Image 1 (spheres, rainbow, N blue to C red):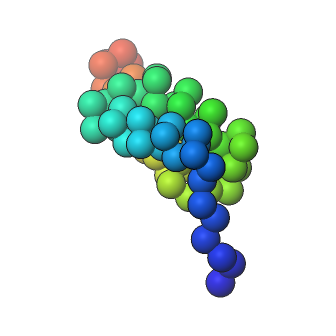
Image 2 (image 1 turned 180 degrees about the vertical axis):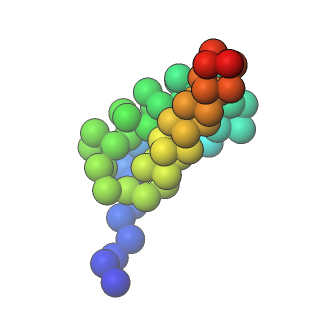
Image 3 (image 1 turned 90 degrees about the vertical axis):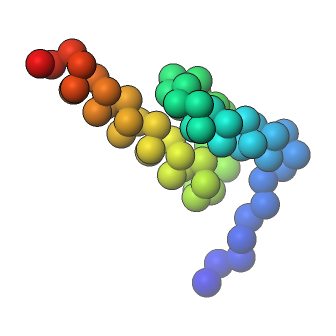
Length: 68
């Protein structure tokens, strides 16, 4: 099992912000914030999963409200 990677201070702060954006369903800002973290840590699991969750939720909103 590979060792756990810690986020740098700046990215850790962005990750806390990302969690708040997830709770408030601010999808576009969340995707941008996750991208900023993943540029420096492309394989970190937390931001990667949250970015996936934001993307899926945004896609579902689009399909439910704009395709019908």
